[in-house]
Image 1 (cartoon, helix red, strand yellow):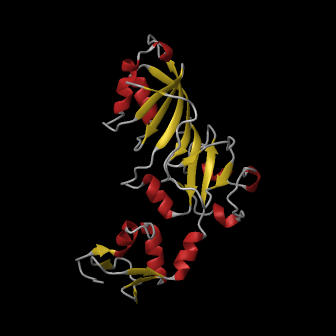
Image 2: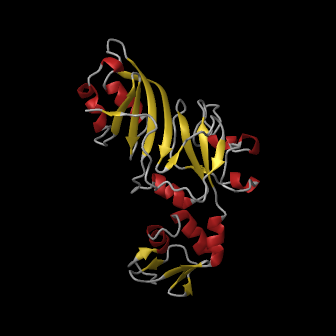
Image 3: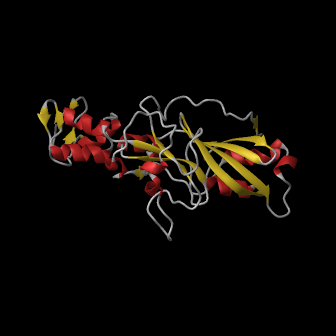
Length: 265
């Protein structure tokens, strides 16, 4: 370990190695739960050199395992993060009476599970579907970190804007511009019914799908996120939540869409 300007911050290296999020790493360092080459490091900002070995106190692992991730079917009118303009934040729905009876995670609800829940990604006020709330920094990093490549899948019901033809009357070539996304961020777009499209994005921007649709004369009537990585919304009822199970992974290979789809373009 080195305290000089050389090397990489210890918390950054721990994040790169998948040991913890940067926030978790700083917390564990401050608690004295991190060792570098066998020596406890408790100074925030400490740096490490390539090849130095980082190990964790068992208490850090227990702390990490106790953190939960919640899957919520977000309704309309609920904001993903902090309360704003009188709208309730999504975390207020994580109460025992709203837990889905089909939850098979085996996790027993505890009030502490509601503390520190943060959205790993967002859904607009006027969108519904799968929203992830987590206490685990590793999950947040995997879903919204700079290098995240986790797919997000949406089903979108559209209607023609004034003077534009309906979706059913469009040729596939007319919709091909949707695949270029916003700011050159490509998207997979498939037609699944006369008035519905399926979008798959790896990196999204604020109201991206709505803006993409407007560019081809389509207004979004309904937008539902149905999958994040290998985790699907499934039968989770609107407004209900469940825990992410120990056998589930956002990085797992996705299953084919339930509705047969025809590629655009």
